[in-house]
Length: 120
Image (cartoon, rainbow, N blue to C red; front, side):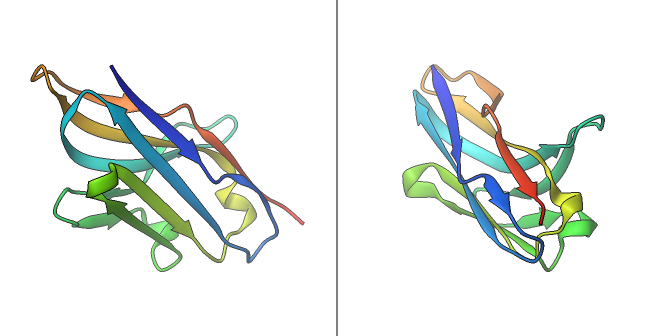
């Protein structure tokens, strides 16, 4: 069994910052790419940022220069530092991890989601 647990969401004013965390636990052998997605009401889920095990990153254009993804491989945790937030960033944020288990089964696992609301 593998679990991803997110934390750090909340309500923030425009221009503010939040830091999301996502910790993976369970029968984990290897974690490959870890990523953050978001889904706003009435919209499709979209990729926000991703990071490989070696630290290579990619971002959607609308968050470049404002968001930073990072990971702590020793703790199986991925972070998303979000600065200069605006109302368009309001969404439920999900983490996803490509994981090979101790039984050599490889699959994508998702967290339960954390709400981020940007409003004055």
